[in-house]
Length: 263
Image 1: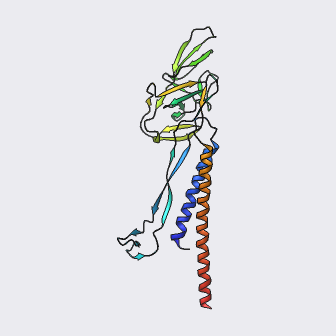
Image 2: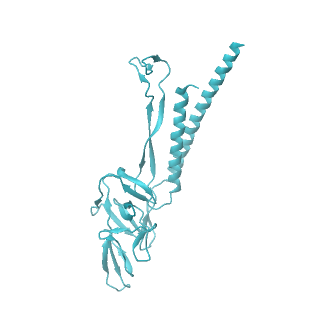
Image 3: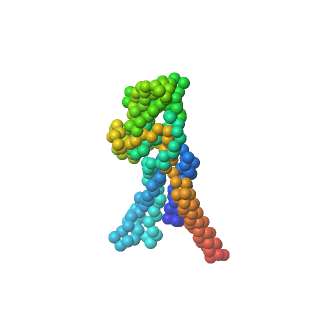
């Protein structure tokens, strides 16, 4: 089989397989709070051993010309994260928090600070505010420890607690909300967390991000769009498979014709 037909079709199948894998992961997390969908960016590359001559013909590595077109291979350029905000849903749980606008919560992981938009928090046995995986949520003063009482969080992230409905609120800490100037520098580490690959996070500018207590940000995955994208990817995969089958049939016909001539 001619490589000029085989390799581009195989590369197309590989990138469509990757695209379907990404879409499947997005769909699986359509109901995951704070999830940000992935988006694969594809490109193409021509054979490094071929080039276009001034006459529009293809040349091989020795400078010889050929009427065979230069093979183009599909490839995955990068996997980007879509940071568009998801819809805000009310839960009325006092430790659930959502960010409207810019910003990330910070949590303390064993390997360093991680960032998240998932504000589904709870208290540990020691009264420390933690995410659903048990990692401490950071305030300006470090991990936040809350005493017993009614918790109130204002839109700037300031946390206060009062004993009973008639008690006097005591300010505990303020959520250490940060902004990432270039979100493309964030990389997923699993469990709705991100790590900043380079640079530094900066404190959120008041007004850029607003905290809503008793609410959670949902996933930004649109299941309908993802299903449409999956159907397209499947059709592209099938087209590449058909091209390979057609090339195989051409080879078989060539072999049969050679056999008849030799008889």
